[in-house]
Amino acid sequence: MASTNTASKLTQREAFSPNGKSVSSPKRWDLITIEHLSTDIILHLLERSDYYVEFLQGAGPFQKWKLLEGRTIANLFFEPSTRTRTSFELAERRLGADVTTLTPAVSSLTKGESVLDTVHVLESMKVDAFVVRHAVAGVPQFLSERLPSHVHVINAGDGVHEHPTQALLDAAELRSALGNLSGKQIAIVGDILHSRVARSNAWLLKKLGATVTFVAPETLLPRGAASVFGVEATNRLDDVLGMADAIMMLRIQLERQARGFFPNLEEYREQYGMTPERMARSNAYIMHPGPINHGTELEMESAYGARSLVLQQVKRGVAVRMAVMEWIFN
Ligand code: CP
Image 1 (spheres, rainbow, N blue to C red):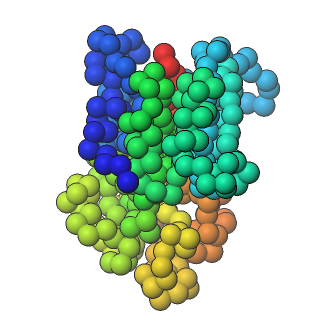
Image 2 (cartoon, rainbow, N blue to C red):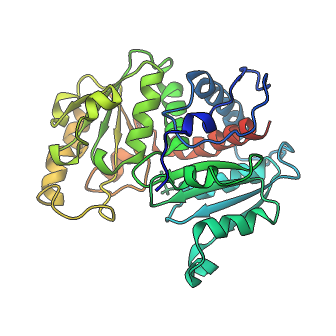
């Protein structure tokens, strides 16, 4: 699939100023990776998500924004999603956009139409931005390189490559819980090998000065992960329990794995599950991108307990995606 080498050209405003005004003449503002996003832009998006999260608190109605009035956004989810798809839709609607969400199973994709043809068809209906999730790494970049320069692409998770908005919302919630992340210890535990969430989080948390430790069985740690991402790596969850400020549990992605990365789910839980016994030996905040395999990586009580950020992560998802849309269109 498409190379991601040119991502930096496409993902950063060349001359970005934190007040959101462009200085030179950027043609394309896409969000494809965290790896190629500058720390300035990341901090800007996190701060803007703080602004939006404030407005989304409480039970009462709120006034919709008009920022995206006259804009049309198409959400293309070629892989299942609950949190990301719904929160993008809500973010787009709350900013006043017209929104369409393609359901691949009842689209002409089932008649053999290609992803690129589908995007060109929608683009000819005057779509201004595509939010794309696909099982194949590189698809958002591939589309970005083939669309006119005024049409934006936002990566909503591509294969095992990146999930930029997930990492942004995770960092926003970590900052809300821990303050400045410089020097903070964040453990990411589980199926690192198949996890775009782990990759985007590693890039982002390192940019914010945190120390990141990947914790996984050797079979689920990408080769050379420590040096590629500039993180620590260990096979022992028990070693990080006492020092981690936050522990991000990952879902065991049975749909992406050939079996055989670990003997069975019971053994995985014993070695890498955040069990009640391990919860008692740690003061860390607990995070999970969802969906959770309850009873494997995390117990229900811990997932929704006092030290859990899981539901705040979900709530933050809307605010972060509003911030991303504002950055892209403003
Ligand atoms: N965290 C996340 O991407 O969840 P969904 O698959 O439900 O969107």
